[in-house]
Length: 265
Image (tube, rainbow, N blue to C red; front, side, top):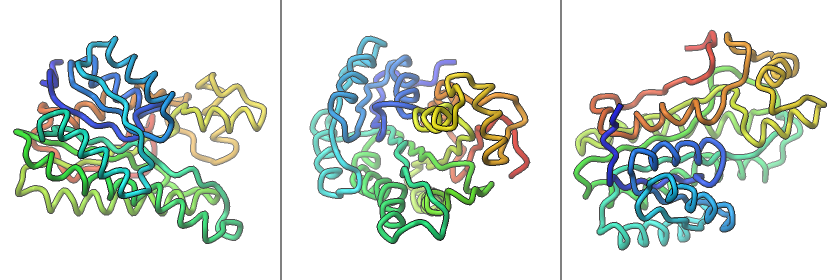
């Protein structure tokens, strides 16, 4: 399917690795100009090189800590100059890495969860809005998580931050409807990300085996999917790419579960 992304401009925050990079690949393969944003220059440079090889014209790596509003603002100022003041797509794929039970988490960990899981998105959207509004068409897609709908006792701060992100995204879809800027959320289930693979290895499981990974998730978290395996970042990316594309012309304010099947709604 042609998603109408040729020469579209896209910023993928958290696009250096994992689901963010997989999404950036999808956009690049359809001919979009993609900027990947994150904190690790070497990772971002490698990602941008790969995107250029896949066909993304003017693929670029931009370094910023999204919890710092000033750094984020500078990134989008550079994007505006580079692409003549317009931006079609903003994707926020950054999430906090905060694990611990309610009783174990410190105040600093709670603040880190909300800074990384909510405020980074707020900073990006706020800085990008003038560029999105000036484009012929625009989409925002934010990454939430299935844990907002199916709790885990070791993820209260992470889940709270993602729930807040989902709520703010819903509000943005209402606010920006008059501008016909569509805002949606994707909630991945158990995806074989670097973090999840690393966790599996810490409990003696081969995290690169999606079937073994899902079995471990069921044993430790009680969250098995209907499908007997974990998902892959490449299976999330096409859903995000559709939501971010011109093909999606009437879907906004939605929270799309990509989770291998579950009981939640």
